[in-house]
Length: 294
Length: 197
Image (tube, rainbow over all chains, first blue to last red; front, side, top):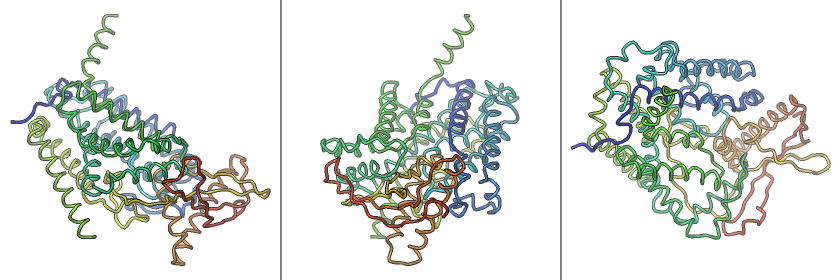
């Protein structure tokens, strides 16, 4: 007997369309505030082609990593993101091209780092999922002609897919810590070392609150086990009642805020994406009714 | 050691498989996914399977340059493993002006688009190799540092900002037991020209 899904069980075409606008909107803001032009000053010899970027010839990157190349790529990506946001063109083509441009964009930036960090990857995976989901059925200039044939359950499934991408990865992080690092990783001295190194190493935020925790050893001892438990419990958001869901989501948001303040590591995108794991359809209906009443 | 890692990784994969099975079988997602048409369902499941595959196999992502990576897919396993290290060591890049004054050349601010963890992991490797016994590794570290400093000089020249005469790559060490306000121990690893290098 399958357990009843309580998240987004009332989802409609509008719910999914709002998720599309929200996901692509986050990308637009992210691209607009990124200081991409500074990347063009970095010497090409520092660039490393990660993963699928190896499929492209080196000459492509020499061209793209010039100031005009980066500007062109960013403008093109913003253009396609805007098309997707307003639901113009053929969904599969627009979102696919957007995804390719975003992968290229991230690949160029991360190519100057030592590894591909995860900050934007959940957002990217959600964008990829939009290619396969009926996200052009509402709030779209070119709505999908097949939208009238779709059952309501399709939108519930689509929203759960989007949420699952985020929630599964939290559980996977928790599982990695339990199976790879336990029990040693939960030694408070390790947390102490991590906080110290994240406060000491160069970062743009320069919060030094983390080291203040050194006077509260019980906090150091509990921080990682509690975070791991929270990560492992994250998928419960799909089946839990509204109170438990709110507690888990608020705790995860608080956990990201704490990581920023104590360790100078931002996960702004993830915090914003947590909102997609709330049942916001009734709110949308209320907003529509109110606008009709006016 | 290797056997223990293989055993732990295998256990983790078994757990993740069980989690996915439970979510789909008992969590009702299997039925829900049947509301998608066959093509969409297949494509979605393939995509989710790739994410899952990356989570299981992308184990060398923090080595630079990586021998194997699956970008844009990656394993999510932040702060998964560590041993107690005392003191903690980090990198720092400082500019030195002719009058002896110093400036912190914060590459995470100067090239913020790359991202803090990515910049930090590159410099961690540079610092490690700067102290290596292997001459080739030390030369690689020197070249990487010089290229970053040269890039910064180009950026500053374009905006008319001042660039120090020299730049030093430092290793900062601090004991995890020391008071919060105690200064870290500094060690110069590499010195490169700042301007016109």
